[in-house]
Amino acid sequence: MATQTQFKKNILCIGAGYVGGPTMAVIALKCPEYKVTVVDINKDRIAAWQSDTLPIYEPGLLDVVKQVRGKNLFFSTEIDKNIRESEVIFVSVNTPTKTFGEGAGKAADLQYWEKTARDIIKASDSDKIIIEKSTLPVRTAQAMATILNANEKGIHFEVLSNPEFLAEGTAIKDLYEPDRVLIGSRENDKGIRARDQIVDIYAHWVPKDKIVTSNVWSAELTKLAANAFLAQRISSINTISALCEKTEANVNEVSRAIGMDARIGNRFLKASVGFGGSCFKKDILNLVYICETYGLTEVARYWESVVAINEYQERRFVQNMSRMMFNTVARKRIAVFGFAFKADTGDTRESPAIHVVRQLIDERAHVVVTDPEALPNARHDLKDVLDKVTFEEDPYKAAAGAHAIAVVTEWELYRSLDYKKIFAAMEKPAFMFDGRGIVDHQKLYEIGFNVFPIGKMPLKHV
Ligand code: NAD
Ligand code: UGA
Image 1 (cartoon, protein in one colour):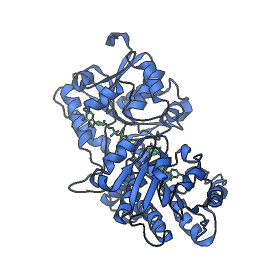
Image 2: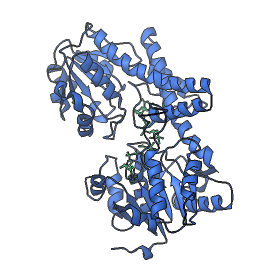
Image 3: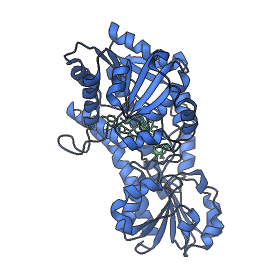
């Protein structure tokens, strides 16, 4: 068993979730001279990180974890001991939307963050660098520094912001080759010395010109702004998709052509049933709340509309299904292909599938959900309506006897299914509602499906 004296530095991460686990695994791999420990209050999660059935599905992650676990990467529930032994502490706990009190439904719930700050004070007996890895409202670092440095032990805590930009499903690639790493600090001696230590960690594998430094407030706000800009592009193209469906324009052709303008760029212009994921909606609503508290009403309304368009797009998808299937889906079997919020993850937080399935259930459809990775989370998300939904691992079985298929997650496997076989086993007329633009519409139409893509004219036999 490795002892702490073998290592040059002890790095701790509090929060072993989608960010803490993969980020620390990559830091451990790239910095073998550092001891990296990840702690969490959730014992089951830590036990899963210690096993070969990791608590999250992320391509390439198990391979990285296996290379370093037990060497310089450790997972533990001993929070106090590990706080005491660390010089650098990343805090990567969840920061969900507040569900109670002032700001409910918009503001970030900072209770987990504050609890962590208090745990750090209690357990520490030496100076430490505390790094905000979680996404937080701009100026949180000030509140944290105030709480932390109010300790009566004479310990100094330097609070930095190092927001994470990884996307689920591509986390390992994003961590290996980030577009940039952002480190915000106070711009005085202590702040800059602490910042340099964090730059040194990333400089093990990230080119220096991609490590960007700034003041703490810019770093905090950049993270919220980056997610808002990404989500805004999706909502923008989704508004255009609605117009395309009325005008015989094709949203894929429009997005390809506008994306070729170097000033616009071609990424994040894929029209869809809507964006999901734990962060886009949460972070935009947090931005909206912050703007409101500063009296920036117009700015708040602008960003709020990005979320409103997303909800409209999800609603529109199901309304369209109902209208096209002779104005009723009641008692019809509908196969929902995909429940994860995007491909290559089992994560279903804020997945458009949740809204689609619930709306279909409200319309009294019988829904069958299939997904290669997300069925355990899907069962949890739909636990109050389990009598109205069936879960089926095999997409062929899910579609058998169905009146319609709705593709809600862009899993690669849905491109290459044997749709002739699927069509043969479905009720007729058979419908395909492609919420992700991934199936071959012309081919499915020729098989006999009535095909309804997002942002394109339908291909109909009825
Ligand atoms: P998560 O819910 O998967 O993980 C958070 C973990 O923190 C949980 O396991 C929870 O048990 C643990 N925790 C909470 N309070 C704790 C405490 N006091 N002590 C120890 N552990 C505690 O969340 P996540 O998806 O990893 O997100 C974490 C943060 O990173 C959020 O602020 C999120 O906005 C941000 N972020 C997430 C992503 C992403 O892709 N999921 C990407 C970038 C940034
Ligand atoms: C997003 C950001 O991309 C990350 O940079 C950020 O770190 C992260 O949020 C976070 O803060 O949590 P993530 O939500 O994991 O990452 O996944 P994305 O690839 O951004 O996809 C989000 C949603 O948008 C998915 O539902 C996806 O299907 C949808 N999407 C994406 C579209 O509908 N169209 C697109 O063109 C792109």
